[in-house]
Structures are given as C-alpha cells and as structure tokens.
Length: 215
Length: 215
DNA sequence: TCATGTGAAGCACTTCACAGCA
DNA sequence: TGCTGTGAAGTGCTTCACATGA
Image (cartoon, rainbow over all chains, first blue to last red; front, side, top):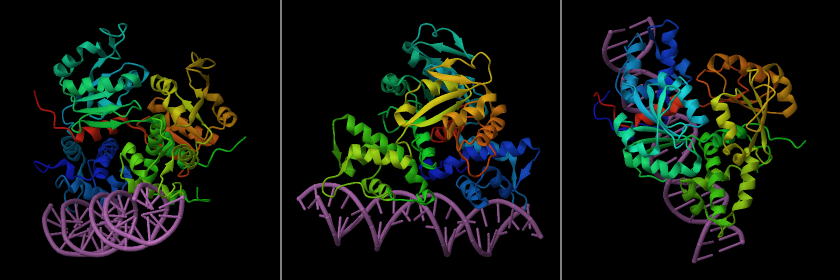
C-alpha cells in the first residue's frame, strides 16, 4: 500500500466496494483458483473490470501484466488497506436480541473482527458469558474499552439510551460506532458513526415495487 | 407525483436520501413546526438545500415559493413516492435472534411497514405467536405469502438455507428480499434483493480508522 | 500475446445562481 | 422580499482505449 495515504482522498464508492472485492477473492479461492484476471474477479464482485483496476490503483499496484492477480496476495493487501490484518477487537453494547444475533453470526469473524466483550445493564446478564462473550456492567465500560483496546463498538441498546451510551463510548476512547438505533447520534466529528437503519433499507426497497393496492 | 414515472430514471443517490427526508420531516413536525424551508429541512437531513430541492423535483413540485414546504403534506407525498401510504405487509422468514430483533423494533412500523407473519422450521415456534406475530411452517410459505399479500420478505434464516428459501419466496410471488445472510442470492433479475451484510459495514468503517498495532 | 495500469473521454451527480412566483 | 424550481456550471466517478510490461 502507498505509504501515508490520505484516506479522505479515496472516493467513497471505492471504499464501499473493497469489502465486495475481498469476498469475491475468497469465493474464487474456494473454487480452487490461485490467480484471476480483473475480468474474473470483476464478474464475481459484480463490477466492471476497469472499475476494479481503477479502485485498486488508489492503493498501489497488485497485479502482474499478462497474468492477473494472485488471490491470496491480494486478500492480504486488502486486509492491510482495511486495517483488518489482525482481527480487530470490537465491543458490543446492549445484549438484546439484536446483540445476540450479532454475537452468533459468523460474518464478523470471517470479515476480520472479533467481539471481545459485551456491556449490558441487566444484572441477569452482567458477569455471565453469553454466546462466548463475557458481559460487563455499564459502570465497567471505560475500563473494558481500555483493557480490550476496542476502537469500534456496536451500539444495540434501546433508543432512549443510545445518545448517552454513545457519549460514554467516545469518552472512553472508542473511535467508531455502528449505530443500530434510529437515533441521530450527535458526537464529535472525529468519531466515525455508521447508521444501520432497517427502516431506511425497507423504504429504499419499497420505492422500486409497485404501489400497494387498496383491497 | 408525476404520473407513470420511470423509477429507473431516478438517480440511486436520490432514492437513498428519500428515507432521510421523511425522517427529517417527522423530526421537524415533532418540534412543533408546520412549514419549513429547504434550508431548515436540509440541515435536519444533513444535505444541501439545493440537493433537497433537486431530489424532490424528480417527483413533482411540492413547495410554495417564498414560503417553504408544508411538512404534513410533504410526508404524505413521500409516502406515495415510497409506496408506503398504506402500511406494507412484510413477511419474516427465520425467527432466530435477528428475526426477533426485527419483530421487537419499532422502526418498521414507524417507517411504513408491518411484519404480518413469520415462517420458521422449528416445531417449537410454528403455531405460536412470537412478539405479536404468528409463526407458520415452511410448508405454509406459499399460502402465507398469498394470504397476506406480502411483496417483501426479510430473510433471516441460517446461511445454508438462504438460497433455497429465497427461491421458494420468489416462486410464491415475493418481489423483494432483504437478505441478512452473507450468501449471494442468485435469483431472477426482476426480484429486488437488498443485502445487509454486517461484515461489510464493519470493514467499511474500519478503513477510516488507524491500523491496529501489534502488542 | 495477454492483461495490467492509467491518461483521456464520457457520464452522472451536485452545486450554483437566478428567473419567477407568492 | 423570500424561497422555490431549474437551466447552467462544476465536480467527481466510471468507462474507454491503449501504452507498457510480463
């Protein structure tokens, strides 16, 4: 990767496609391939070959002219770019249904992350190990963030607690929050906040459907 | 709304912002406002005023020059555009932690949707009412889709079942699937598939953070 | 020869700036 | 006067096409 790269200079669409490339690479690898051209890779990732090459060009040169890309090598490079060469420790805050769903799913591990601790206010959960992860009290939040060095947190608390918990997380040193509540978090500009709003997702999809008819 | 509008002609970014506008409108309404200018609205939705006006222009003219937009009226228009003037019935397939999380959350109702039925293979769940929604067996899938007229389905089954269940849904007449598994569904082009991959979301965020250091 | 990496061309989205209307 | 709706200008992303290197 180009050294001292300015991440702001990389177009957002490019960043959004990187995870798709990583997945496409693993998919081809699993099919027994070792090397693939930008065409094969692009088809798997559902983009154009030029787009794939252009996207990668922001980070350096990875392929071999006349041959293509070494899959394993490119995965390693993407992991460097995404900062997931070592599994990133992630904190889960709010062990409700959604929190448990996140803990149970494999996609986080597969994608380069590991939920290393959970926080909940319920005394029934604090101190227990849930889905393989130890649950701590809210009072221990700052301590846990420091101890496990979690720069990222998944916010799956009830909406009314979201803003206050988010502030505690930032105070404790968390740099990025994946916000599963529908609350608009107001935090320092420096903190990366990614909102995951199921309502938005459904509305976006509904737009493309025919209108519902009256019965 | 412009009649017989070609939805393909509306830029994707514009469609993606519509849900944000709807939320901004409700937010201002709750603050006691009745009318708002594109500036007020745009600030709430975190876009530029021109962008807001341009986006709306794809669907007709809604404001009053010199005054601004009537909030209630614009919400109604947006609901028409998004096809959520009547609550859209949605089918939930897979009543695990994630499925239950979706059922419990309020954002779907608030956004113009209602989960009207659930499907699961577990005999412990079939026939019961879970989080206010009746659970049916997989064998009843087609029947349930027809009976409740669900054009949209939330796919929260284990990954190994995803493709086959998705095919059954399409066969039964479902037009859009929100796919929460990491499986790349291969379905007819006509079906709208929206993937929600938590792994992608985390990778995207991780890109903007400093690399993890070796300890 | 074959496929990458990359300037140049093309396209799409955003922002500007103002005419027109309340 | 104040704000919308919109052509025109500007910006940024995507696609093209080819020089370069294996």
